[in-house]
Length: 237
Image (cartoon, rainbow, N blue to C red; front, side, top):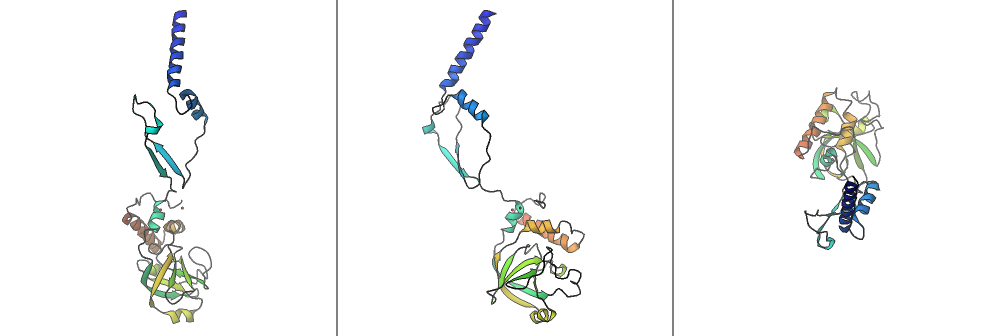
């Protein structure tokens, strides 16, 4: 029994000595491993450069100077809806526009409220309604000849779904009639969010035009090569 204990002790000492000889830079392996176990893992930081070193093959001595280093920068994950929102190709286009007002018969129930629950705007920033699968909520654009006015898509309408028409809000019926139907050049200065569009519509699916817009967004995801089955509709593409 005594000899057995002596043998075991000798093997342990020899093993510790052997491991300690496999030194990482200025630090024995056992001490390094103990320190690493006590350290708490820290999450990767976005925009920061990290280095990845190639793992050693078996029986290859550790020589840091001979190991090729690789670096990468950790980027913020982009949900599929955000990617799809940024996949628009053109910022300038020719579109058909119409006009509406809050005291029309089909808008009386909503009054001066838009589809996102805030008041319709008419000033330097003006409200516009559109098919959110084509112009997602939050899309901002200018119309040629109106350099000081920005239109923002914050509303939708059943008659607009499946069309490229944009309906511009006017505060009076006379201004609505004066605009009529016009084909204009627009410049999109900021695309809106498909994700926010889906969040706002998810509790309104009893309406056919809302379901059509959601299906249109899913179709854009498929066009962008992204899985439509895992839409983060409750989550920030």
